[in-house]
Image 1 (cartoon, rainbow, N blue to C red):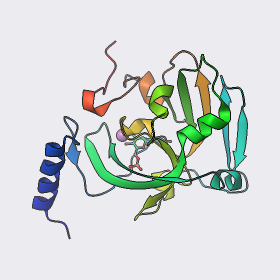
Image 2 (cartoon, helix red, strand yellow):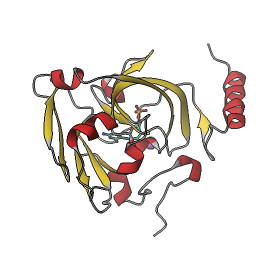
Image 3 (cartoon, rainbow, N blue to C red):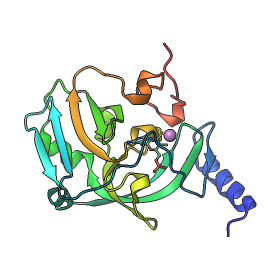
Length: 202
Ligand SMILES: Nc1nc2c(c(=O)[nH]1)N[C@H]1C(S)=C(S)[C@@H](COP(=O)(O)O)O[C@H]1N2
Ligand SMILES: [Mo]
């Protein structure tokens, strides 16, 4: 049992640490938030594909993905609807591992991340190359359930959580930035919570 006063105290502590972005509040729960329905996972048919401006476009089966070197990352998660969930323990494959395999061409500056069901989001390549950006297939102590993006979701801790696409299926490396699902309707092209990059200015 967690008392409201405890939540308030933790929130004050994260604010004092500089880890609570402006306009956010701390949640002890893990809300489920997405558009559309939760896809069913068939490990035999699942594919992860990488293409666009890369030297080595490739596709992975679920077994091949699971065989890639895994890394654990502890990171915060900030949704633009104002909740922040702290100290998530993710495990998965770093974006850098995927990028090294793909060998992006010098013109590649952005990535369109595509999820099953049609959700997309655009992220600058530079943001994805950080050492805590990963494709997570585990979350502890709660499992990475289908409603939280299982079997595989992107996690970009330093950007608003709409960039952390659930049920990720493919990546397209591109030269010029191109709006994804939420970005098309006015959300920010980058989405840094500490700069409150919620909406686009134009
Ligand atoms: N495929 C997909 N991924 C998505 C979304 C979505 O609608 N579809 N919503 C995003 C938003 S706005 C948030 S806040 C997080 C929520 O993740 P959670 O449900 O695991 O808390 O998922 C992000 N990833
Ligand atoms: Mo969100």
